[in-house]
View 1 (cartoon, rainbow, N blue to C red):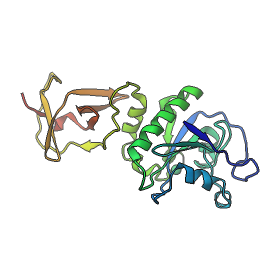
View 2 (view 1 turned 90 degrees about the horizontal axis):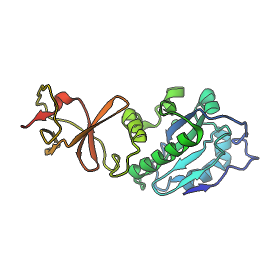
View 3 (view 1 turned 135 degrees about the vertical axis):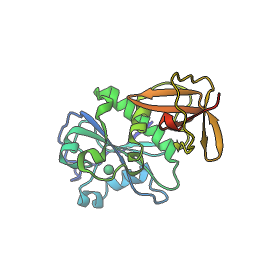
View 4 (view 1 turned 90 degrees about the vertical axis):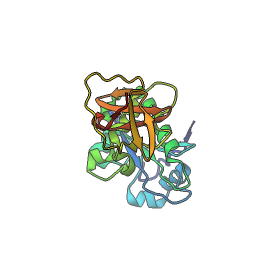
Length: 227
Ligand SMILES: [Zn+2]
């Protein structure tokens, strides 16, 4: 459910200029304080401080709630002049008392909704970094292509963001010609051995499923053949 809690029209950080959004810009709030959830940011955006700092955006998502602060087709101040004119700004909360994986999942659902509503292709879902070079969204930038793949994966069932992404650490290298994913390959991850049960390629990046809800990314060269 989206809670509408708009910035008052009289506030200077809601200038009201109409836009036709062609992009979605993803941010993280960078505020890890306990309590820095979506409601707190909704209050912040209505404050004097937000007006002085000249900031505003459209949505803030935390692990249980989503707040809307601006209409989707009016300008916000979150991504530099070009990004502001072209995009809907979505902030994901990173408060220490929140569950970022839930927040991330909820953010993905909102982004899918906005993509459908405004006919925005996945290629135009961009990080704040894209517009201004700012290190934002700081955590998701490290795995941006995975995040995009997760937005694209509309299949129901176990979500691939239920668990943190892990890296393949085995050094054992097997070269093979005909990959057969029927229980023939395994990876060692933090001492635990997983058998790869399937692979999934979305927009050119490949992920390997270790079990329900747990995927890895990585080069096949690091996959060990066990049969
Ligand atoms: Zn940002």
